[in-house]
Amino acid sequence: MSEPHDKVPGRAVSISKDDTAGPGSGGPATTGSPVPPAAVKAIPVRHYGRWISAAIVLGLLVLLGLAFANAEIHWPTVPDYLTYRTIMSGAWNTLKITVLAMLLGVVLGTLLAVMRLSKNPVMSSVAWGYIWFFRGTPVLVQLLLWYNLALVFPILDLGFYRDEMNDVMTPFLAALLGLGLNEAAYMAEISRAGIQSVDEGQTEAAHALGMTGPRTMRRIVLPQAMRVIIPPTGNEFINMLKTSSLAFAIQFPELLKEASTIYSRNLAVMELLIVATLWYLALTTVFSIGQYYLERYFQRGSTRTLPPTPLQKIRKNLGSFRTPSRVGGTTV
Image 1 (cartoon, rainbow, N blue to C red):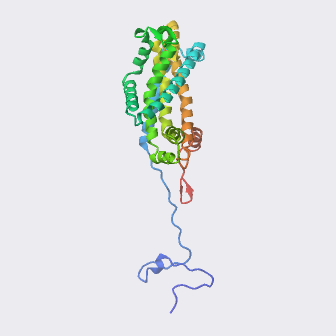
Image 2 (image 1 turned 135 degrees about the vertical axis):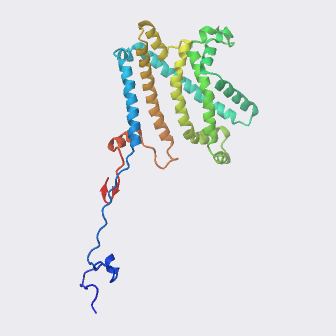
């Protein structure tokens, strides 16, 4: 009786599917290496909706650009005034009042947050009342109240210092108090949320080591709360940079006030407003990048991998517009 396959010494014999089919299978028995599977051809899914939406958005942007290009705007005026001395002075005043008011808001807001979390009912009530008042009234109203404070107190008499309120309450001081004290109410809530995000066991452990309450707050709680406090604080700083334009109403020479002073003389209203817009965009962009890196710094130890920097994101997006994949040994 013959064998179904010849046995060759030193050679591996593979049995195909047809070999095991049996006598009535209708197919001849084959020998040799198995037939490799056909290569899989991956066909990417076509996202027609993305192309349509992208075309609509680009079309709207083109129409908007054409509208501005054909408008009665003398575009050469914009670069002429972009570095104009008065505009530069207004931008510096905007930056100065923003930094000082934000510094006042952060310091006072942190103090108010600690007061509100205090077990002393008087301290907690005073902090709550402050937050209630300054969050419940518009910033513009507060600026006007400070600027017209001489109507209520014509003379400022502190015992060791006496002067007329009109001479004391300058537009700069009114803007600083109006913006800074209002910001303190919002920073108090942000700081309180950050402090409460720290586990109470941290405070208990610090007290067990003999640390006092203020030292525990300064050395243990606040450093851990910064990861929660920094993002909204950066957002508040950007908002303060734009809200400072409200000081226009009390004659503080910030960016918008200086731009309006110029266009009231030369009637280049839209051109000067575009100049002010470009300066605001430049300042907010610079501080937004700084906020990102500050958040990234405080995320160390809380995340295993830090988020990519803007430069890394740009490099990655320019390197490939889509993520390549390998199917069957072939890149598609």
